Length: 65
Image (cartoon, rainbow, N blue to C red; front, side, top):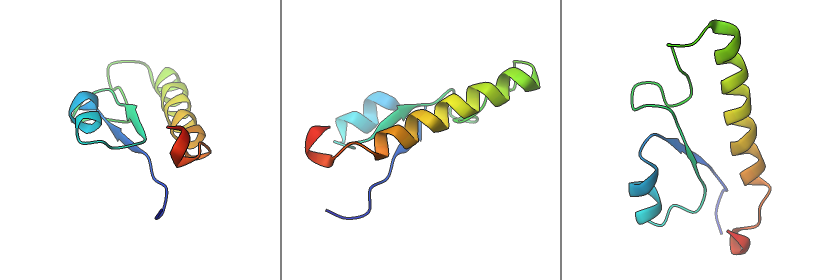
């Protein structure tokens, strides 16, 4: 099956349209895993939750996606 991976992108719909099995919705094209418009502490929490979501997707078997 290959190496499992997760794509974090602001372009969620095109990624799903190309049958990418594990996709997490990012913030923006320039800042997929961050948000410079919020305070630093909130951004760290935001990034943590986003990465945690991506890591949780890695635990899902490919046939259950």
